[in-house]
Amino acid sequence: MKKILVVLVLLVVSLVRLEAQEGFHFDFHGFVNPHYYADSRSVVGGREDMMLFYPKPIVRDSLGHDINDGWQANMLAITARLNVRITGPEMLGAKTSAFIEGDFTGSTNATIDNLRLRHAYITLRWRRWVVDDLYRTPHMLIMGQYWYPMVIHEIMPMTNPLNMGAPFHCYARQPQVRYSYNVGRWEAVAVACWQLDNMSQGLLSGNPQSSTLFARHSLLPELNAQLRYQTKHLFLGAAANLKTIQPVVPDPTGTLHSSFSWSLFGKVTLGSVTIKAQTLLNNSLYEGCSLGGYLMLTDGSFCDWHFNTVWLDIERNRGHWRPGLFMGYAKNLDFGNADYTHCFGRGHDLAYLWRVQPRLTYTTQKGLSFVGEAEYTYAGYEEPVGNLRLSLSAVYAF
Image (tube, rainbow, N blue to C red; front, side):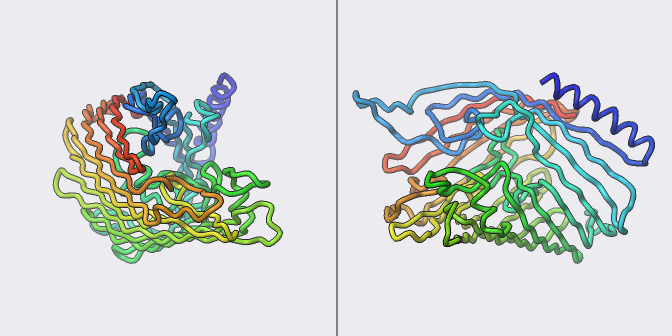
């Protein structure tokens, strides 16, 4: 930790000198977010279960007691975040900028509390104009680690825990090249992305594992295309996603498997209320912290198993007191398929999943906020179970 602090201090000093000498501008921001949470049963999740997906199934001991039942609680501050945006001179006829951000959640459960790279990307913007009080750029290129393309960050649910609506809404970042083209209120987006922290599952040397090798051996990036329409108070769009992996490594045959997903999404602002919604046909978006996956069948072939997901988020966007409500529902369209030797993904044993999550935020509007939430998630196993999460947190943003 001392080495990290020394590196950060030296970096800040170097950036200040560069700003003075070369005309670059550096804008530092971040927040500290201590978070307390308690669950009524054990859950499937990550980072000390701070990122909650759904409750674990009923597992009975020799006396018939459910070992996953019972309250547990924890408090973490690992989401503390630091970032810097760098804007520089015009190059290649484009406005240039870069963004670097890190937090302390670690890249895996084993590295929790370690500094982790969240974002690191370069942005090139050619020309700008204003339509409906919104800045438009006819050509924009992003290169680096940025939001996973099935994460529509403009409509991201404003829940406070780490999951941000997952697994109903995707939540991940990936290295990528992203190009967008604007014509008036319309925008077309094309993305090619690769893997790092969020990895595919497959058979690696005969063992089920998560690894970037399954995507790397396919030689193909994950591809995404989007069409968006935006005014000052309305945002609508559609996305299509194609992922290709080699599920077995090594594999002399080089057999590949492709999964296709699509989404419709939108946001509307009605006075002091913001409403966001999305529907998602999810085919193997495990890498996006979502549901779905694929099966290795008994004949050695592969097939997807699909989830259909819908969610709605409503929030008051003004004033000191800002109530909100998130609701999500997911249905396993291939529940009960048992003709396989290996199952890869998340939620195959669920027939359905739903969540209701009310929240109340008090904000000073000067960087300090307090948030209370009650999150009830109900999982449709053969014996359905529910989990109630109660959480309290403070946010100091700067």
